[in-house]
Length: 347
Image (cartoon, rainbow, N blue to C red):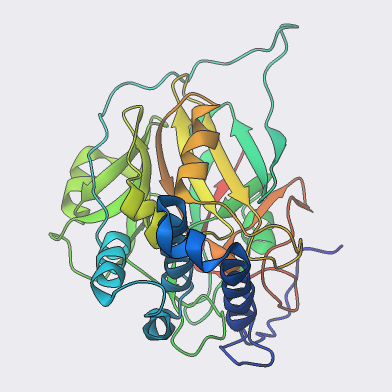
């Protein structure tokens, strides 16, 4: 499969339609699963209540929250409002700023450790876990266009990278997936690319200092610049901060199940990037991962700080020119057009 392209044919992101819409298809499958589970289980047990919360959260986080109004038979509006607030305003904690270990890492044979991708299969999703031993090789790269994004393959190739994942979110009011206008704070190589609320208003970010340390928390542009941040991008929620999970039951339910992308740093300094499939898009048995699923995956790699990036159809990982999972989207290049991405660029 040829990943690099100069052709820019944007295909619609399948807005909601009863006959063809991706979200309605997912919604229909979830509702069918609910009814197959039985009303006594759904409305008479704690597990059934949590299942209903997860279904509503999946729709809330699908970029079509206006359709949540049809889900009143699953949850009271007060609970739906609570979940919506948990997604928009999750609890935030500042990660500690401490020296990171950047010395050369070697494997059991004495050879320099190289980038690797592990595969973890579960009943509900497949995860790809990329481990980058040298954190100073990870950079945020932005699209070179002012009015449209670029596929991850181009962002990697044009910057002499070898691997990467998608980064932050973007505004997409027409649903065409062009990746034009990023959301929140975006800093690339010390330069402020985007700051929709000015330089003084804190926003949740994941960021790299120049020594390769990864931090996360609520920071303003001014604060990030004072810390000497090299790259930063807004998204969330936080998954792990200072070794502790930040995903509450409300946050977990508010985000539901979906393809996921996240980035974090292990205690030894290595960067860990994780993606999963989901939404029954290519594998008809894979509903996707929850935010707590992502926490458990990071914990397997001794990650001390981690934060979610844009998921859903944006979720993409490439290593050595190979797509690690098929993205849950349809475009002319088989992946979404992105405003920015985390790219591994060797020294």
